[in-house]
Length: 116
Length: 114
Image (cartoon, rainbow over all chains, first blue to last red; front, side):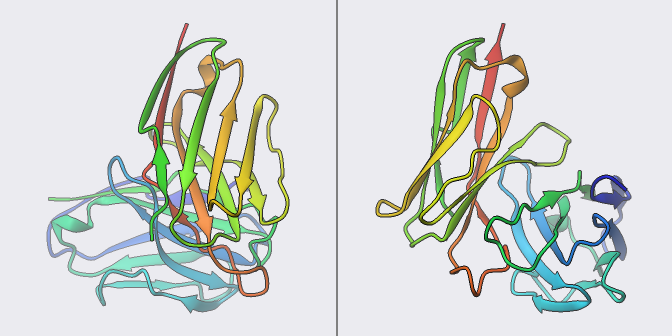
């Protein structure tokens, strides 16, 4: 597709439920990022993939959060046993290369998660 | 450490100019500017690299002061379409080790009225 595509766009989960959020990056992009954006705040880094390798997961808030990109294209962010503080917009982003110098990072519209 | 943006909010009339600042307490390698409208994806505006600058859009430009560890975004002759929240994202890693992990400021809300 033309841009980064995320699904579902909106998800309401009951506390304790598991959720899976999908990201389709721009075709051919090497780098893939997940960010979490709370209401009224800037995006916060969660994790980074270079192709299928997860090179940085320092931003994942707990071991309930898990991300994968098994074939180096589509990625899934999974949140187990959701809690109310997990409510946020989860943004996926991709970039064509692995370095940041002059490297535009493109964001998707996000998956809005509400935990009730 | 999160960069600090100022002002937090700006209200303009069409045709007026605005400046948004982004300051970091740490040395920066690059600064990325984005605009986000409610419910939409952050849209890339431009990147400024240490020792250089890239201009992404007409009437929107930016500067990068490496010594002061800050960047400023300049919007001239503002249009209604400029309304949104502007974020700076900073990358503290040098080119060889950087992969694009950005730390974002809290955002500046820009509202342009007719």
